Image 1 (cartoon, helix red, strand yellow):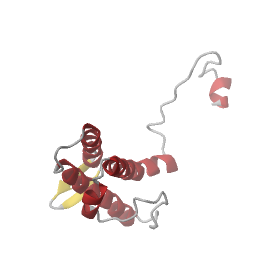
Image 2 (image 1 turned 90 degrees about the vertical axis):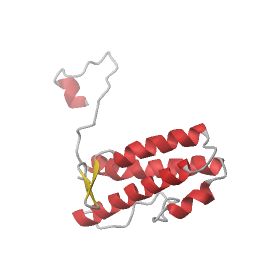
Image 3 (image 1 turned 120 degrees about the vertical axis):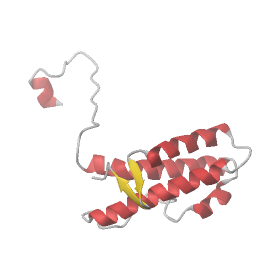
Image 4 (image 1 turned 30 degrees about the vertical axis):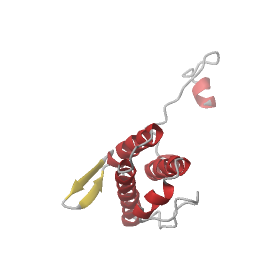
Length: 137
């Protein structure tokens, strides 16, 4: 930011909002995996509030949503990263379906399900039973 101010790109006296959407690096990589994971965790927390978590968790293949620890994979291996992302997408889709099967579906759980569905389907295409992700770094 200091360099931008020096070059006159950023005003000293006005609020500056910087969109880092196209910024690469560790933050961008993390978001690709963090977004579906956090959506799953959010839906589980809301389900717990409604005493539905124990009915939803059995549909999840991954058992590490209770921890904030980074998954232990080889982050330099594109195939391992692809499998991790696929596991999040599959868990997200299964969780959405299980949540929607709960009746009556509380509004906050419905909203969390809708959001997670959008996350799980964003930039993901099923081709002959294989998941293709266009946003995989």
